[in-house]
Length: 191
Image (cartoon, rainbow, N blue to C red; front, side, top):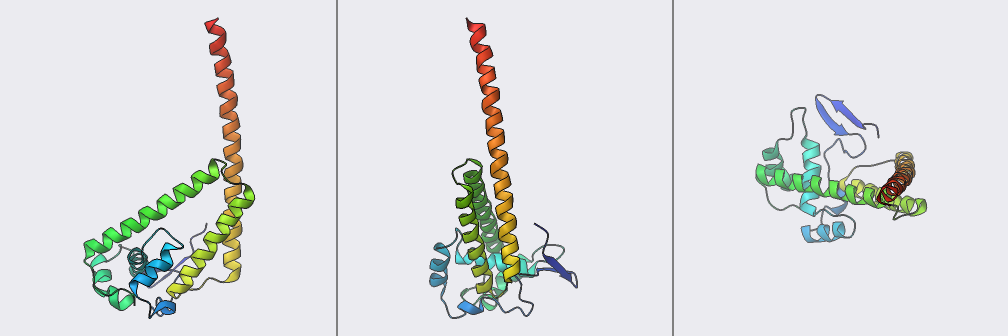
Protein backbone atom coordinates (compact mmCIF):
# COMPACT_ATOMS: atom_id res chain seq x y z
CA UNK A 1 0.00 0.00 0.00
CA UNK A 2 1.42 3.43 -0.78
CA UNK A 3 2.61 5.67 2.00
CA UNK A 4 -0.23 8.02 2.88
CA UNK A 5 1.98 10.36 4.91
CA UNK A 6 2.56 14.00 4.30
CA UNK A 7 5.44 16.06 5.56
CA UNK A 8 5.02 19.54 6.93
CA UNK A 9 7.84 21.46 8.54
CA UNK A 10 9.82 18.27 9.14
CA UNK A 11 6.91 16.46 10.81
CA UNK A 12 5.38 13.31 9.40
CA UNK A 13 1.67 12.78 9.99
CA UNK A 14 -0.87 10.46 8.47
CA UNK A 15 -3.09 12.27 6.03
CA UNK A 16 -6.05 10.03 6.90
CA UNK A 17 -5.61 9.28 10.58
CA UNK A 18 -4.53 12.72 11.64
CA UNK A 19 -6.36 15.73 12.89
CA UNK A 20 -4.19 18.76 12.16
CA UNK A 21 -5.72 20.73 15.06
CA UNK A 22 -4.62 18.08 17.52
CA UNK A 23 -8.13 17.34 18.74
CA UNK A 24 -8.05 13.67 19.61
CA UNK A 25 -10.64 11.22 20.87
CA UNK A 26 -13.42 13.81 20.63
CA UNK A 27 -16.12 11.16 20.23
CA UNK A 28 -15.21 9.64 23.59
CA UNK A 29 -14.13 12.77 25.43
CA UNK A 30 -16.24 11.95 28.51
CA UNK A 31 -15.63 8.19 28.53
CA UNK A 32 -13.56 6.69 31.30
CA UNK A 33 -10.64 4.35 30.77
CA UNK A 34 -12.54 1.15 31.63
CA UNK A 35 -15.32 1.93 29.15
CA UNK A 36 -12.77 2.59 26.39
CA UNK A 37 -11.03 -0.69 27.28
CA UNK A 38 -14.34 -2.59 26.92
CA UNK A 39 -15.00 -0.87 23.58
CA UNK A 40 -11.58 -2.03 22.33
CA UNK A 41 -11.87 -5.53 23.81
CA UNK A 42 -14.89 -6.15 21.59
CA UNK A 43 -12.97 -5.14 18.46
CA UNK A 44 -9.20 -5.46 18.89
CA UNK A 45 -6.37 -7.17 20.77
CA UNK A 46 -4.91 -3.99 22.32
CA UNK A 47 -5.80 -2.02 25.44
CA UNK A 48 -6.91 1.58 25.80
CA UNK A 49 -3.49 2.44 27.22
CA UNK A 50 -1.66 0.87 24.27
CA UNK A 51 -4.02 2.54 21.79
CA UNK A 52 -3.68 5.99 23.34
CA UNK A 53 0.09 5.74 23.56
CA UNK A 54 0.50 4.39 20.01
CA UNK A 55 -1.66 7.25 18.68
CA UNK A 56 0.25 9.86 20.70
CA UNK A 57 3.59 8.40 19.59
CA UNK A 58 2.50 8.69 15.96
CA UNK A 59 1.34 12.27 16.49
CA UNK A 60 4.61 13.26 18.17
CA UNK A 61 6.86 11.40 15.71
CA UNK A 62 9.69 13.52 14.37
CA UNK A 63 12.34 12.73 11.74
CA UNK A 64 14.63 11.60 14.58
CA UNK A 65 12.10 9.45 16.45
CA UNK A 66 9.48 9.78 19.17
CA UNK A 67 10.13 11.82 22.33
CA UNK A 68 8.78 9.18 24.73
CA UNK A 69 9.23 11.38 27.82
CA UNK A 70 7.21 14.20 26.22
CA UNK A 71 4.43 11.83 25.17
CA UNK A 72 4.23 10.35 28.67
CA UNK A 73 4.30 13.69 30.44
CA UNK A 74 1.46 15.14 28.34
CA UNK A 75 -0.67 12.00 27.93
CA UNK A 76 -3.56 13.19 30.17
CA UNK A 77 -3.74 16.45 28.17
CA UNK A 78 -3.68 14.64 24.82
CA UNK A 79 -6.00 11.73 25.62
CA UNK A 80 -9.10 12.49 27.71
CA UNK A 81 -9.51 8.99 29.15
CA UNK A 82 -5.90 8.82 30.38
CA UNK A 83 -5.75 10.15 33.93
CA UNK A 84 -2.05 10.11 34.72
CA UNK A 85 1.30 10.87 33.14
CA UNK A 86 3.67 8.03 32.24
CA UNK A 87 7.43 7.76 32.22
CA UNK A 88 9.26 7.56 28.92
CA UNK A 89 10.04 3.91 29.63
CA UNK A 90 6.34 3.12 30.28
CA UNK A 91 5.42 4.82 27.01
CA UNK A 92 8.07 2.84 25.15
CA UNK A 93 6.90 -0.41 26.74
CA UNK A 94 3.22 0.20 25.86
CA UNK A 95 4.13 1.15 22.29
CA UNK A 96 6.21 -2.03 21.98
CA UNK A 97 3.28 -4.15 23.21
CA UNK A 98 0.96 -2.42 20.73
CA UNK A 99 3.38 -3.14 17.85
CA UNK A 100 3.78 -6.74 19.03
CA UNK A 101 0.01 -7.31 19.15
CA UNK A 102 -0.48 -5.83 15.69
CA UNK A 103 2.22 -8.17 14.34
CA UNK A 104 0.65 -11.22 16.04
CA UNK A 105 -2.77 -10.33 14.67
CA UNK A 106 -1.29 -10.03 11.17
CA UNK A 107 0.52 -13.36 11.61
CA UNK A 108 -2.71 -15.05 12.69
CA UNK A 109 -4.77 -13.62 9.85
CA UNK A 110 -2.19 -14.43 7.21
CA UNK A 111 -1.75 -17.97 8.54
CA UNK A 112 -5.51 -18.52 8.32
CA UNK A 113 -5.54 -17.22 4.76
CA UNK A 114 -2.47 -19.15 3.59
CA UNK A 115 -3.58 -22.40 5.19
CA UNK A 116 -6.83 -22.38 3.28
CA UNK A 117 -9.01 -22.18 6.39
CA UNK A 118 -11.18 -19.57 4.70
CA UNK A 119 -12.83 -19.30 1.33
CA UNK A 120 -12.33 -16.16 -0.76
CA UNK A 121 -15.76 -14.92 0.37
CA UNK A 122 -14.90 -15.55 4.03
CA UNK A 123 -11.63 -13.64 3.60
CA UNK A 124 -13.54 -10.77 2.03
CA UNK A 125 -15.85 -10.70 5.07
CA UNK A 126 -12.86 -10.71 7.45
CA UNK A 127 -11.20 -7.87 5.56
CA UNK A 128 -14.44 -5.90 5.37
CA UNK A 129 -14.86 -6.14 9.15
CA UNK A 130 -11.20 -5.16 9.67
CA UNK A 131 -11.56 -2.06 7.48
CA UNK A 132 -14.81 -1.10 9.25
CA UNK A 133 -13.14 -1.46 12.65
CA UNK A 134 -10.09 0.53 11.56
CA UNK A 135 -12.34 3.30 10.21
CA UNK A 136 -14.35 3.37 13.45
CA UNK A 137 -11.18 3.65 15.54
CA UNK A 138 -9.72 6.41 13.35
CA UNK A 139 -12.98 8.35 13.53
CA UNK A 140 -13.10 7.81 17.30
CA UNK A 141 -9.60 9.30 17.50
CA UNK A 142 -10.83 12.38 15.68
CA UNK A 143 -9.51 11.55 12.22
CA UNK A 144 -11.38 10.78 9.03
CA UNK A 145 -11.20 8.40 6.11
CA UNK A 146 -13.33 9.15 3.10
CA UNK A 147 -15.53 6.42 1.62
CA UNK A 148 -13.50 6.23 -1.60
CA UNK A 149 -10.27 5.58 0.33
CA UNK A 150 -11.98 3.02 2.57
CA UNK A 151 -13.32 1.13 -0.47
CA UNK A 152 -9.98 1.32 -2.29
CA UNK A 153 -8.09 -0.07 0.70
CA UNK A 154 -10.63 -2.85 1.17
CA UNK A 155 -10.42 -3.80 -2.53
CA UNK A 156 -6.62 -3.76 -2.53
CA UNK A 157 -6.47 -5.92 0.60
CA UNK A 158 -9.01 -8.39 -0.80
CA UNK A 159 -7.14 -8.65 -4.11
CA UNK A 160 -3.84 -9.15 -2.28
CA UNK A 161 -5.26 -11.83 0.03
CA UNK A 162 -6.83 -13.67 -2.91
CA UNK A 163 -3.46 -13.60 -4.68
CA UNK A 164 -1.75 -14.90 -1.53
CA UNK A 165 -4.35 -17.67 -1.23
CA UNK A 166 -3.93 -18.71 -4.90
CA UNK A 167 -0.13 -18.72 -4.57
CA UNK A 168 -0.42 -20.78 -1.40
CA UNK A 169 -2.49 -23.39 -3.24
CA UNK A 170 0.10 -23.55 -6.05
CA UNK A 171 2.97 -24.00 -3.59
CA UNK A 172 1.04 -26.66 -1.65
CA UNK A 173 0.29 -28.58 -4.85
CA UNK A 174 3.94 -28.33 -5.87
CA UNK A 175 5.11 -29.64 -2.49
CA UNK A 176 2.67 -32.56 -2.66
CA UNK A 177 3.86 -33.40 -6.18
CA UNK A 178 7.51 -33.27 -5.09
CA UNK A 179 6.75 -35.34 -2.02
CA UNK A 180 4.93 -37.98 -4.06
CA UNK A 181 7.72 -38.23 -6.61
CA UNK A 182 10.31 -38.40 -3.81
CA UNK A 183 8.33 -41.07 -1.92
CA UNK A 184 7.97 -43.19 -5.05
CA UNK A 185 11.74 -43.13 -5.66
CA UNK A 186 12.44 -44.09 -2.05
CA UNK A 187 9.93 -46.99 -2.23
CA UNK A 188 11.51 -48.35 -5.41
CA UNK A 189 15.01 -48.41 -3.93
CA UNK A 190 13.84 -50.33 -0.84
CA UNK A 191 12.45 -53.23 -2.89
